Length: 216
Image (cartoon, rainbow, N blue to C red; front, side, top):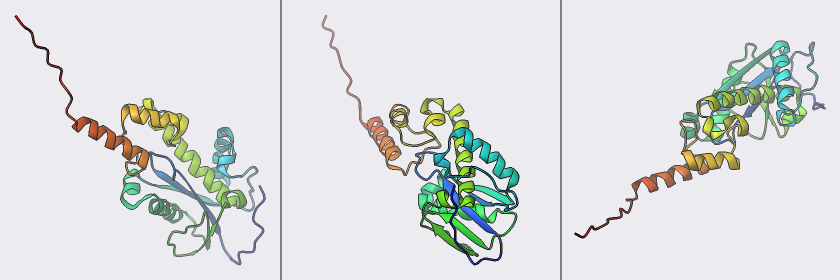
């Protein structure tokens, strides 16, 4: 991966931050913050979406072993529904940064929106492909959320969370229509809301009862 060749003008630690789970129909949004150790470079860092699951798992362990420090945090489904997915994502990012053992002087965040932070921060569009620390954060966040989906799949196997990871695939939408929403679905997201509304309408509509007269 080619890193951004910029002089940030910072005499201190730089943290990379990214999230996973903004788009899915279920589960928390997960954010990670990572401060890498220049003395222990990690080979193979890239945007988590460009890596295979096996590559992500290997790098997940390497990042945790060799980074100066890291933190993973989340915002719950309840928080997503209460303050919306964008604000919940920024909340998860703040929590991840606050959880770092070492305070960074600069925070580099993937995307174009920034949470309110007490230190200097910069947003970088496609930062997960350009900045090693953001790539590392994207891997920690992605693997953490994928593991959550695998765990939930055991509890709710009818939905196929282990396969689609909560995204609105044809398989997931079909399961929603057949089984309704489970407690981990984001009811404010349109596909889930529409299923809930349809089921509510169907349950409240009186069913026609066929009456057969028997003549003697």
